[in-house]
Image (cartoon, rainbow, N blue to C red; front, top):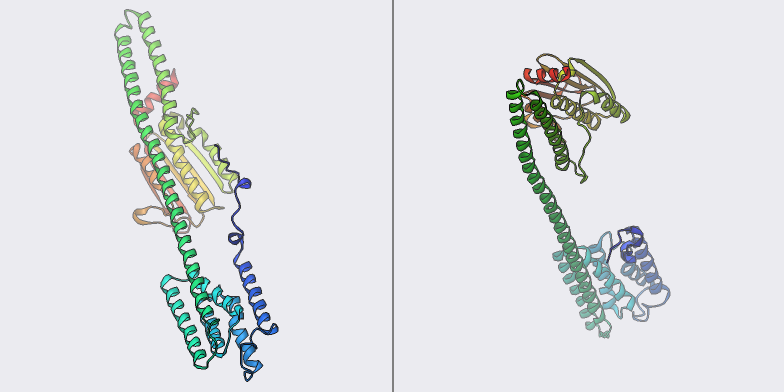
Length: 412
């Protein structure tokens, strides 16, 4: 059966879990005031007290045993101590009404649910001792104790109920934690399975590329040997090289798309390069960061791999500007020469804090840019400027045979 994830159809929690702390405080205040009114206006105390006890003492005892319950959620242990003390005095003087038992139970329940187990046990023992003292004092004055024992039972019963509620909450929280841990473990296993599958695809990619390159190499050798004497066969070999090369590129695009695209669909879009830096700068400007872009030199002679690496370094550097120096002005300069490509990206913001080993705190962008530069035998430096801001400089040496290959390709 399908399970709906719509929040509108999800079951609502009980009312007790939907109430806020202020609402519970208001409930406690109302309960305390109603209990105090019942004791004072309803005559619940005078029938149990001797006639020589003054009205002022009665009012003080009634207030002390009821009103502190209003703030029991703020100070559970002190409230229990005050209510228990007043209840013990009432027990010693005569008969304590049922309202007193209710106040004692409310205070004991919250101590059991809110406080640590050891603190709650000590508070329970202290309350029972105080009430026992009141019972003994009443017995010494020959007061009836049938109703006085009820306070002892009420405090103990409500404390054990509160303790059970607290333990149940801990148990449910433990179950929820275990469920979350299981979900995380399952998610990690799923991610690991995806990574393992991508490694397998990468191995297949190696086989495909190796086989295709072997065929291309063999056909190129055949064409070279028979080109002068059998031009028709040489043209056929070149045509086979073209078809094999295109097929190999198509397979590379599809398999690399599976390796690097987390959407589950292969990315068949062409790789970005120097020609796309203008669009990248426009995107950064739209995010609120002004960018000045300058591209100069023999950029057309760069290999696609070098052009892609330049683009990724500039992209990561501008991303860091947007994330860590939003609103600053950035300057990008790319200069291609005979020796290689020089890249400089700087900003006038407050920059990023440098961490150990020259890394930048907050991510691994600098590490990724340095790895890309190292793949071409180049270097990359990044760090804050003395007057404020941050600068990334990189140099990518371009091999001469690669440039010659690009020139030959463009000359055809």
